[in-house]
Image (cartoon, rainbow, N blue to C red; front, side, top):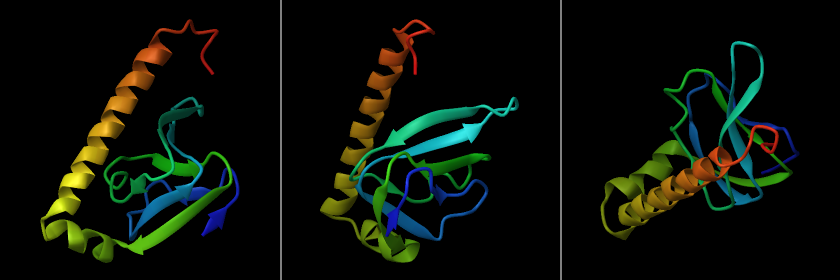
Amino acid sequence: MILPADASVVRKGVRAARAIAIRYAMLRVQRFGGDGRRQIVNLLLTGAVVGTELDDRVGYAAEACTGVTLLQLRLPDFKAPLSRGGALPQAVIIAHSRRLERMRWLTLTIGALAPTERF
């Protein structure tokens, strides 16, 4: 599936029925504050998979930052190999660890900037 920039990929309040793998480009995970301003809380790059992570997060959504190419899988088809054990669950844990490290680095980098330097 190919979507244009700013297209909604995961709508806020809608439970996931599929897993979405980013084949090319970037998604932003965001929410809107009480004052109506958008707060970007995560950036997902090529290779990332969005499944049920946003189901329990009230008000969060994911949109395309740029034109994006996605691969969609039915959620049961995505989860079945993970429940069988083996190398795949271990690879998923490693991928999540890398994502956490990247988010830590982004947080430190943004925190080091003056408010006027932040985008």
